[in-house]
Length: 392
Image 1 (cartoon, rainbow, N blue to C red):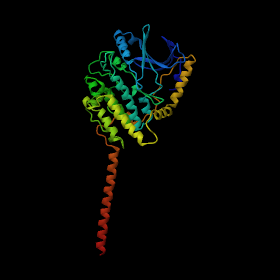
Image 2 (cartoon, rainbow, N blue to C red):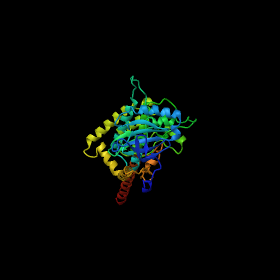
Image 3 (cartoon, one colour):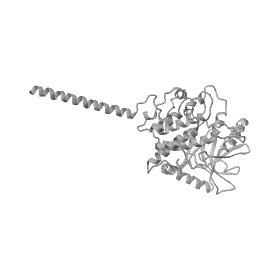
Image 4 (spheres, rainbow, N blue to C red):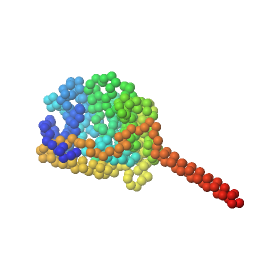
């Protein structure tokens, strides 16, 4: 973000019992602010998500959001960003959430290519958070059938200390139910949806498993999997495209990791991992085995935290500046500019349906060289034989 973004923000500095420090982001559903409790000005930071007035004024939406927020407030897991409370001041509706000092997984993979082990560790943590939500029950012990429905790199946060948090439980459902869905229109992050979600089939915990598989596939291949030139093409790819095995795209892709990714991406829910917990176990076991074989560069929260601090050093410094200014009494606009983030390039492209792997090309190249060498040797042998006979 550039210096000109540090501008005066024409909004009230206080919302209920929270003092707004600076605006983090603004979207179609809400504005996000970093805030602190007025009663505890030196206490912990929180995020206030203020719902836009035209949405908060819709009684049906308001009731639905209240129910979703109450549900999400019951989630308590290290890999889930906590919803603290839902508040209202007059007609203004806002959600108070745990502040995760870090970046989205989307921002991270745009800046750095993570190791296989670190990618697996991040997704294992996200799977653990999802499994906790999927297992949530009411006071009578009945399953609440919580499904995230919007698992994507946008909704997985990585803190500067290397912690992983899944965000926006329930909000995705509220957003998708905001307006009646038009025929042929699919809402949400289309390229990460499971086939049953697109075809209006039964959505359950295995739907989130598929989406998590797409995220892991893209992290470890640096290629977009299903995204097409149009929504129709993206839908076609999700439903019908032959998914290329990651080893066809990346040299030395670990076979064990490949099996996990492809199991998560099975189109039939009954053929996937039957829970995010199963996927977590598979990934965590793999990371544990990898970490036991090396003495350096282990995939841990601390090592990921070092990467985060190095890659986002400028952003961390800017956050501190924003916080210092806001603590001094000036509400500033901290909306991030993402255009300056360097991209990996290949992540912006989509995989081909039948890609030619670099490994196979190399093998073909060496095979041709060997064949050419053999033909040359044969020609030389024939030449020497001919010369020998001519001399004799």
